[in-house]
Length: 321
Ligand code: C5P
Image 1 (spheres, helix red, strand yellow):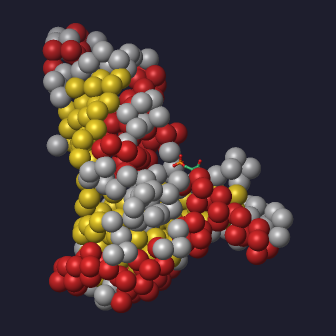
Image 2: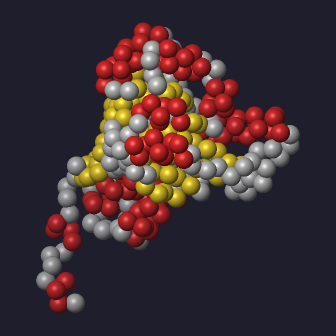
Image 3: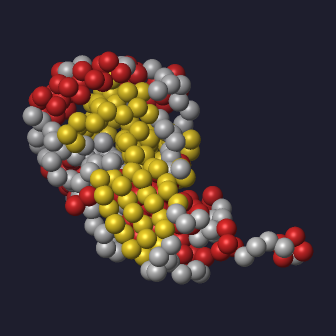
């Protein structure tokens, strides 16, 4: 139409570089239902975005290339298996444009730690490429592309606190009445998410016999009312009591030493402790900033983890900076 024809060509206004900041998550509740026919598990999970950030920068370049700097950069794959590169290609394919981008990830989220670091980078790459290529993808499409990339990717776009259902990709915002102070104990080496779900199934079949991990045998997972109330009222003590992760027995079975980490943080005064997602990072809720500093110091002294991080939340999801 007439008003569009006077616009400059799109390329004239495209940016030279786009940077997106994206947070880590902890699941304050992770209720795992039975194994579905597609191999995924029905979930009722409450995702909580915390202020540990990866930064993804996108610049024009032929093809899709990826470089990584920051914490544990050496263990992040830079080939086609990297979820950020797959996100760039998926967005380009959806719009029928060529995928031409040099992505750079500056990592601060623990790698393979159960804090959705790879999913965060994918969410950031979607937003960054959308802006770099001037696509103006609508929100619904971005979330659908995110869900195809992985169960946690939509939440990395969403941020804040949200209930995830289905395999975790169907999100409903959860109201939160205050800021919470977290300490994270990062383990030496990661845990594979499929291996932890597999161990969860094995433990269930060990307890309930063959088929004991299947969807028709495990009760449907549901959000915990006490946990939602604790979040709404900003009550850290109540949230600490309500924290729960059905993958924790499986993570502890694969990595028994995590029990020592959980004990060390609890003895140091944490008001709640759990394995984050599929682990092996352990998350500790504390009542305020002073308590979080004390718990962090005690964990660092305990010799039960490789590294200790502190973060507040909730924080927003992937954001252009
Ligand atoms: O969706 P995403 O690729 O992050 O999932 C990684 C793996 O975790 C899946 O291949 C599956 O083994 C397991 N998973 C699951 N049920 C979910 C989410 C993930 O079994 N709801």
